[in-house]
Image (cartoon, rainbow, N blue to C red; front, top):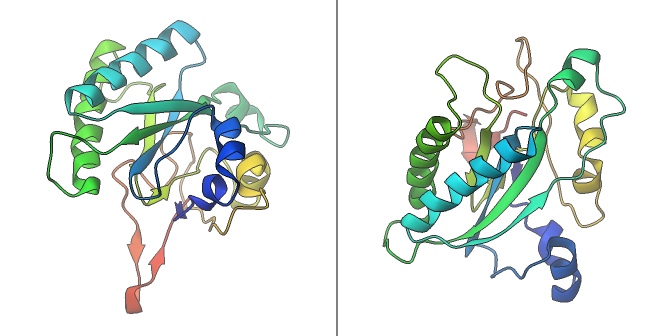
Amino acid sequence: MVPASWSLYHMTSSKRSQRMLGFELPPPGEYAVGMFFMPTDEKRREKGKAEFKKVAESLGHVILGWRLVPTNNSDLGESALETEPVIEQVFITKSSRSDAEFEQQLYILRRLSITSVRASLNIKRGGERDFYMCSLSSRTIVYKGQLKPSQLKGYYYANLGHENFMSYMALSPAAVLLWPTAMPDSSGCDLRLGGGKEMCLV
């Protein structure tokens, strides 16, 4: 999980940032980023994205654009490679139809869109989840996967190794890792320590 990671997009010039993303961004705090594990099948992937967009727009959000997250899987094991998803980020605005705090708006969108996308793609409870939302927030982005902590930066190096990237933390739970079940979960839970500090699991 990466707190306040907008430096990757905003410590460059606006023109360079637009070239990187393909669209313009509002100031930090005025938009959110969603991190998704998606199907490798293009038709299934686009169907899920269209369903998410439909739910978002019904709640008053505007989809600014999608970004394919660059990755390097050269260090992954066989089981991770077999189930490796396509990873994309979505950039969305605040809702124009709600006075709720932005993170509350995003929680509602996350819950409603998960239900809608699962129904659209016929994803059964307890079954394989090939369309999975890692995070949706205006404050944090979750970079995770079927990875060891030592593999995280290498896999996401184009982002986590970028000169404008400020910081990240990589930890691993004592459990069998799969792409969707790697911590933290999509509810955005974390471990809060004393003194207002946070420990974020990846």
